[in-house]
Image (tube, rainbow, N blue to C red; front, side):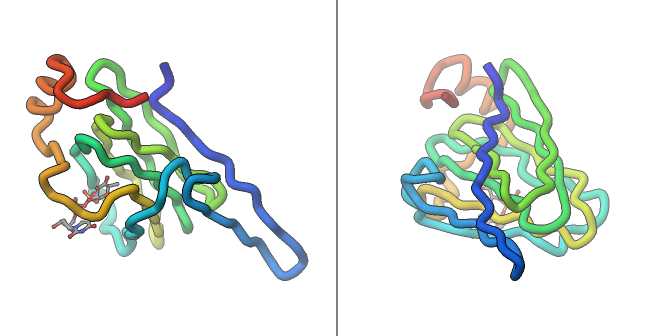
Length: 140
Ligand code: T46
């Protein structure tokens, strides 16, 4: 099973430039409750290092590039996001790490729930235990 689920968003382009439309329950597979973005990342830093118990998200690199490690507790896969017309599904119970942010990278994330720190699993050993005991539904 691939841990890398990428969406290709249609680009509505003309001689003025490009336009990408993101619609909840359409080309984004959930109702969008929250949007946040990461920018100004410091060279060499990595972020993430957690999984979400129930949250589903789609990450889109609007500018520059960054890499993701996706991990379901059994397998790990890596992917580069480098295009504003591609979205990466970050499903619930997928441990994820982001690194190799290019200078000027802007990473936007759409989420199906408002912020809730109790939805995070920030200890890798706790994540593995939850995977093995099926406490939360695993990524589909
Ligand atoms: C994720 C990856 C892709 C809030 O107060 N509200 C929010 O909506 C978010 C997203 C974060 N925060 C606070 C929590 C921390 O004190 O902002 C601080 C930085 O968050 P964090 O260290 O979790 O950032 P990342 O880049 O490691 O992870 C973020 C998201 O938090 C996370 O859900 O999946 O991006």
